[in-house]
Image 1 (spheres, rainbow, N blue to C red):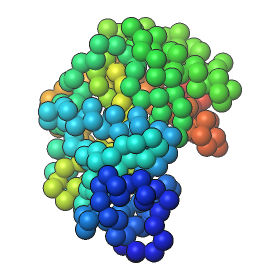
Image 2: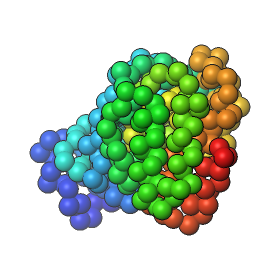
Image 3: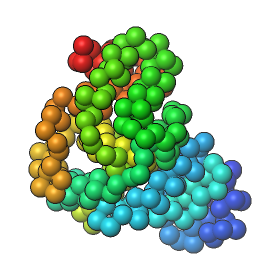
Length: 266
């Protein structure tokens, strides 16, 4: 890491964690930094307080995927332990499947709550007593922001039928492959959560949306926590949420993908 000019946040971090000896940007407003000789990850942005809370929630679940330890969370600044990474292996996938099943076995008392951000997109974090209430409000709010309310309303009208009697569990909430680190310890580490009370298939659908869900992961997950019958019919539903988020943030082809997912239920 280069010594160079100290980052703007250095004077906030050093009194808490120690002397910074070098930093290098890794993505956007994120850096790999050496503090007293140890590598750490530093990130700034409006949603990092929710991210820190999510990492803490995930870390408290026995058997769940590991997450980097939160070293400092102050305002718009987050510092976590650094995760050494290696090539993805079969063991990574099998272990991640079992650990996700353990995470999704943690019940929540209500739907929603938790993070008010998914990536750089603000979302409604209000708790709801029912799944249709939570997903209906969140889907329509996002759809209205990208002028797709007409396409999404018929989906919301079927949420009672689609969700059935499933209860809320703790979910990562933003589980695409960019938020999985393949550790040198053969564990799949999770980062950048948008934790809330949700449906477990929400996490699985997002992994499948942004890159296919490997058979090894799916099989090891199902051995611990099989999905309820009809999961194939719910996959487009749980894909619709991240597609609407991406439509709000980026537009382009995500809009047409969101429309296609919504029309599956017409």
